[in-house]
Length: 169
Image 1 (cartoon, one colour):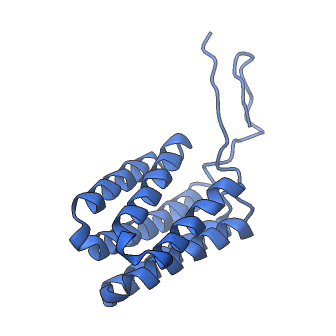
Image 2 (tube, rainbow, N blue to C red):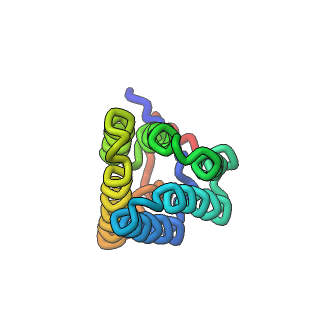
């Protein structure tokens, strides 16, 4: 008698976006660790590049505009890097949690956002740590999904459904 609801928020989660997003995060994390004094250029550039990737793979406009807006704010006001990046991570973490696709990383994203606000002096190392963790975990998850027989985010349309099961996509 139970009714199951499935919300497919991540319908635009293409394999190419996941790979590009992961590689961009890892590269940005390495650059941030190597050149922490150029954090505003690196973090702002990462966020704008992430927004452009989102636009390229046709992610909904409000989600794609968020990193571009945050990157622009970092370029305009470099002294606000901890708060701008923490706000971006907070929204990003909520999106990950609400999509139920990557819940563990959603919690970690929110924890990193709080740590950045609490320790603005070590923002470069916290951002680098988050980006390296996010990029590596996303690549690991991508290869696990591939090894398990495809993308776990897509519903199996060939699976027989119970009469009481409702799928909302």
